[in-house]
Length: 107
Length: 123
Image (cartoon, rainbow over the protein chains, first blue to last red):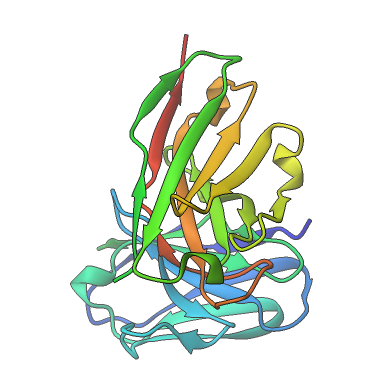
Protein backbone atom coordinates (compact mmCIF):
# COMPACT_ATOMS: atom_id res chain seq x y z
CA UNK A 1 0.00 0.00 0.00
CA UNK A 2 1.21 3.50 -0.81
CA UNK A 3 2.25 5.57 2.19
CA UNK A 4 1.92 9.36 2.14
CA UNK A 5 4.51 11.31 4.12
CA UNK A 6 3.71 14.90 4.98
CA UNK A 7 6.32 17.36 6.05
CA UNK A 8 6.93 19.17 8.20
CA UNK A 9 4.79 17.89 11.03
CA UNK A 10 4.25 21.37 12.46
CA UNK A 11 4.88 24.82 11.03
CA UNK A 12 4.82 28.06 13.01
CA UNK A 13 4.07 31.03 10.79
CA UNK A 14 2.54 34.49 10.86
CA UNK A 15 -0.52 35.77 9.00
CA UNK A 16 0.44 37.17 5.64
CA UNK A 17 3.25 34.67 5.03
CA UNK A 18 3.38 32.22 2.14
CA UNK A 19 3.57 28.52 2.94
CA UNK A 20 4.16 25.34 0.98
CA UNK A 21 3.19 22.00 2.47
CA UNK A 22 4.69 18.78 1.15
CA UNK A 23 3.14 15.36 0.58
CA UNK A 24 5.38 12.59 -0.72
CA UNK A 25 4.11 9.20 -1.89
CA UNK A 26 6.11 6.01 -1.37
CA UNK A 27 5.33 4.97 -4.96
CA UNK A 28 4.48 6.85 -8.12
CA UNK A 29 0.87 8.00 -8.15
CA UNK A 30 -0.76 7.17 -11.46
CA UNK A 31 -3.29 9.73 -12.59
CA UNK A 32 -4.19 12.91 -10.75
CA UNK A 33 -5.79 11.29 -7.72
CA UNK A 34 -4.58 13.47 -4.91
CA UNK A 35 -6.61 15.73 -2.63
CA UNK A 36 -5.95 18.13 0.24
CA UNK A 37 -8.15 18.69 3.28
CA UNK A 38 -8.19 21.28 6.03
CA UNK A 39 -9.32 20.31 9.52
CA UNK A 40 -10.01 22.60 12.45
CA UNK A 41 -10.55 21.38 16.03
CA UNK A 42 -13.93 19.78 16.54
CA UNK A 43 -14.74 19.79 12.83
CA UNK A 44 -14.73 17.21 10.07
CA UNK A 45 -12.11 17.52 7.34
CA UNK A 46 -12.97 19.99 4.58
CA UNK A 47 -12.02 19.25 0.98
CA UNK A 48 -9.86 22.06 -0.44
CA UNK A 49 -8.21 20.58 -3.53
CA UNK A 50 -8.95 17.49 -5.63
CA UNK A 51 -7.32 15.98 -8.70
CA UNK A 52 -3.99 17.53 -7.55
CA UNK A 53 -4.84 21.12 -8.49
CA UNK A 54 -8.60 21.70 -8.75
CA UNK A 55 -10.13 23.91 -6.05
CA UNK A 56 -13.45 22.92 -4.53
CA UNK A 57 -16.22 25.48 -4.98
CA UNK A 58 -15.91 28.25 -2.41
CA UNK A 59 -12.23 27.70 -1.61
CA UNK A 60 -10.25 30.96 -1.91
CA UNK A 61 -7.71 31.19 -4.70
CA UNK A 62 -4.88 31.69 -2.20
CA UNK A 63 -4.97 27.88 -1.96
CA UNK A 64 -3.31 26.02 -4.81
CA UNK A 65 -2.14 22.48 -5.39
CA UNK A 66 0.48 21.03 -7.69
CA UNK A 67 2.73 18.05 -8.26
CA UNK A 68 3.00 14.72 -9.98
CA UNK A 69 4.63 11.34 -9.60
CA UNK A 70 5.57 11.10 -5.93
CA UNK A 71 5.77 14.76 -4.89
CA UNK A 72 2.80 17.02 -4.29
CA UNK A 73 2.41 20.41 -2.65
CA UNK A 74 -0.27 22.64 -1.24
CA UNK A 75 0.57 26.32 -1.30
CA UNK A 76 -1.22 29.05 0.60
CA UNK A 77 -0.08 32.30 -0.96
CA UNK A 78 -0.89 34.59 1.96
CA UNK A 79 -1.97 33.13 5.28
CA UNK A 80 -5.15 34.42 6.82
CA UNK A 81 -5.95 33.88 10.53
CA UNK A 82 -8.58 31.27 9.63
CA UNK A 83 -6.01 29.16 7.74
CA UNK A 84 -4.29 27.93 10.90
CA UNK A 85 -5.37 24.30 11.05
CA UNK A 86 -4.21 20.79 10.22
CA UNK A 87 -3.83 19.87 6.54
CA UNK A 88 -4.02 16.33 5.21
CA UNK A 89 -3.23 14.98 1.79
CA UNK A 90 -5.19 12.01 0.49
CA UNK A 91 -4.55 9.58 -2.33
CA UNK A 92 -7.54 8.01 -4.08
CA UNK A 93 -6.14 6.14 -7.08
CA UNK A 94 -5.92 2.40 -6.51
CA UNK A 95 -6.43 2.80 -2.78
CA UNK A 96 -7.56 5.48 -0.39
CA UNK A 97 -5.00 6.68 2.11
CA UNK A 98 -4.39 9.83 4.12
CA UNK A 99 -1.13 11.39 5.17
CA UNK A 100 -0.44 12.07 8.83
CA UNK A 101 -0.98 15.79 8.46
CA UNK A 102 0.83 19.08 8.85
CA UNK A 103 -0.26 21.42 11.61
CA UNK A 104 -0.07 25.12 10.82
CA UNK A 105 0.15 27.15 13.99
CA UNK A 106 0.36 30.87 14.61
CA UNK A 107 3.84 32.12 15.46
CA UNK B 1 -27.85 21.71 1.13
CA UNK B 2 -25.98 18.47 1.72
CA UNK B 3 -26.23 17.28 5.31
CA UNK B 4 -25.62 14.07 7.21
CA UNK B 5 -27.31 12.90 10.39
CA UNK B 6 -25.15 10.39 12.21
CA UNK B 7 -26.02 8.29 15.23
CA UNK B 8 -24.94 9.38 18.69
CA UNK B 9 -22.00 8.60 20.93
CA UNK B 10 -21.62 5.08 22.28
CA UNK B 11 -19.47 3.25 24.81
CA UNK B 12 -18.65 -0.37 24.00
CA UNK B 13 -16.81 -3.08 25.84
CA UNK B 14 -13.85 -4.85 24.24
CA UNK B 15 -15.02 -7.73 22.09
CA UNK B 16 -18.40 -6.15 21.38
CA UNK B 17 -19.66 -4.84 18.04
CA UNK B 18 -20.67 -1.37 16.96
CA UNK B 19 -23.27 -0.25 14.46
CA UNK B 20 -23.45 3.41 13.51
CA UNK B 21 -25.78 5.04 11.03
CA UNK B 22 -25.59 7.88 8.54
CA UNK B 23 -28.56 9.52 6.87
CA UNK B 24 -27.66 11.90 4.05
CA UNK B 25 -29.99 14.59 2.74
CA UNK B 26 -29.88 17.35 0.17
CA UNK B 27 -28.94 15.19 -2.82
CA UNK B 28 -29.95 12.03 -4.66
CA UNK B 29 -29.07 9.27 -2.20
CA UNK B 30 -28.20 6.57 -4.73
CA UNK B 31 -26.14 8.69 -7.11
CA UNK B 32 -23.06 9.09 -4.91
CA UNK B 33 -20.91 6.49 -3.20
CA UNK B 34 -20.72 6.82 0.57
CA UNK B 35 -17.41 6.26 2.32
CA UNK B 36 -16.71 5.57 5.95
CA UNK B 37 -13.63 7.12 7.54
CA UNK B 38 -12.63 6.99 11.17
CA UNK B 39 -10.38 9.30 13.13
CA UNK B 40 -8.87 8.32 16.45
CA UNK B 41 -8.12 11.15 18.91
CA UNK B 42 -5.15 13.18 17.68
CA UNK B 43 -4.67 10.94 14.64
CA UNK B 44 -5.16 11.35 10.91
CA UNK B 45 -8.27 10.06 9.13
CA UNK B 46 -8.32 6.36 8.25
CA UNK B 47 -10.44 5.01 5.40
CA UNK B 48 -12.53 1.94 6.19
CA UNK B 49 -14.61 1.31 3.08
CA UNK B 50 -17.33 2.51 0.76
CA UNK B 51 -20.73 1.49 -0.52
CA UNK B 52 -22.54 1.98 -3.79
CA UNK B 53 -25.91 3.04 -2.44
CA UNK B 54 -27.66 2.10 -5.68
CA UNK B 55 -26.84 -1.61 -5.62
CA UNK B 56 -25.22 -2.21 -2.24
CA UNK B 57 -21.79 -3.15 -3.61
CA UNK B 58 -19.03 -2.52 -1.11
CA UNK B 59 -15.27 -2.39 -0.86
CA UNK B 60 -13.30 -2.47 2.37
CA UNK B 61 -9.83 -1.55 3.50
CA UNK B 62 -7.69 -4.65 3.91
CA UNK B 63 -6.98 -3.59 7.47
CA UNK B 64 -10.62 -4.16 8.44
CA UNK B 65 -11.47 -7.16 6.23
CA UNK B 66 -13.43 -9.72 8.20
CA UNK B 67 -14.42 -7.24 10.91
CA UNK B 68 -16.29 -4.55 8.96
CA UNK B 69 -19.57 -4.44 7.10
CA UNK B 70 -21.19 -1.48 5.37
CA UNK B 71 -24.83 -1.67 4.35
CA UNK B 72 -27.74 0.52 3.40
CA UNK B 73 -31.50 0.75 3.83
CA UNK B 74 -32.80 2.39 0.69
CA UNK B 75 -36.29 2.85 2.14
CA UNK B 76 -34.79 4.96 4.93
CA UNK B 77 -32.00 6.56 2.85
CA UNK B 78 -29.56 5.43 5.50
CA UNK B 79 -26.20 3.68 5.52
CA UNK B 80 -24.76 1.63 8.35
CA UNK B 81 -21.24 0.72 9.44
CA UNK B 82 -20.72 -2.34 11.58
CA UNK B 83 -17.40 -3.23 13.20
CA UNK B 84 -16.97 -6.37 15.26
CA UNK B 85 -14.48 -7.65 17.86
CA UNK B 86 -13.82 -4.17 19.16
CA UNK B 87 -10.61 -3.29 20.96
CA UNK B 88 -9.44 -0.13 22.65
CA UNK B 89 -7.66 0.99 19.46
CA UNK B 90 -11.05 1.26 17.77
CA UNK B 91 -11.93 4.27 19.93
CA UNK B 92 -12.56 6.97 17.33
CA UNK B 93 -14.97 9.30 15.57
CA UNK B 94 -16.64 7.38 12.76
CA UNK B 95 -17.52 9.66 9.83
CA UNK B 96 -19.54 9.03 6.72
CA UNK B 97 -18.47 11.10 3.72
CA UNK B 98 -19.70 11.51 0.16
CA UNK B 99 -17.65 10.81 -2.95
CA UNK B 100 -17.22 14.08 -4.80
CA UNK B 101 -18.38 12.86 -8.20
CA UNK B 102 -21.76 11.34 -8.93
CA UNK B 103 -21.62 7.75 -10.17
CA UNK B 104 -17.96 7.50 -9.07
CA UNK B 105 -18.08 4.08 -7.44
CA UNK B 106 -14.43 3.75 -6.57
CA UNK B 107 -11.83 5.48 -4.47
CA UNK B 108 -12.63 9.19 -4.43
CA UNK B 109 -12.05 12.60 -2.97
CA UNK B 110 -14.70 13.24 -0.32
CA UNK B 111 -16.55 16.53 -0.51
CA UNK B 112 -19.11 16.36 2.31
CA UNK B 113 -18.56 14.78 5.70
CA UNK B 114 -20.79 13.96 8.62
CA UNK B 115 -19.72 15.21 12.03
CA UNK B 116 -18.99 11.68 13.14
CA UNK B 117 -20.26 9.21 15.69
CA UNK B 118 -17.96 8.93 18.71
CA UNK B 119 -17.34 5.36 19.79
CA UNK B 120 -15.36 4.68 22.94
CA UNK B 121 -14.15 1.14 23.59
CA UNK B 122 -13.48 0.62 27.26
CA UNK B 123 -14.10 -1.94 29.96
